[in-house]
Image (cartoon, rainbow, N blue to C red; front, side, top):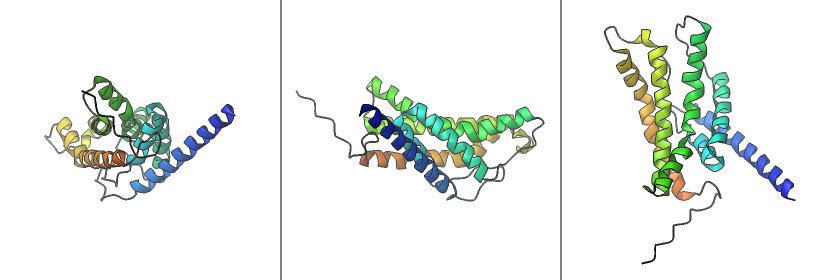
Length: 205
């Protein structure tokens, strides 16, 4: 019976993960017009991936997001700079497509560290974790801008500043949007039980 339950749990995890990947892909199509060298503000496309990471742990979240990234590349057009070699092309795939969505899913690990420090409640830790994961996504795009897209910077403009501004125009609004929506979701549901969160018992005097 125990083995059967384990198989059922694994099956449920795979089904939920596949559904959340599909939802993220659908949401990725709902976005504002894309920028010239890639990047757009989507309708909370990272929220389903972050949900899986909180529900089943950040390690599974990384794998789940890797699958999403590969499928997303196959379904969307891939913007490519004038890269001089296969190494730079591989680096672009890593920094612009694989790492960004995977880094978002370390959010539960960040939340866990905050909770252990005792410096925030459940919603605060989830908000900080989600924002932290989204910020790491931003960092990955910044590095890509500096290492691979530097030739697109306006003449005389510092490449780091160019990458910060260009990628910030869509990464920072997405950071705010995904964090706010995910915190609202966290107020309504416990990710482990899929029930309403239980308020902590008041401390006795």
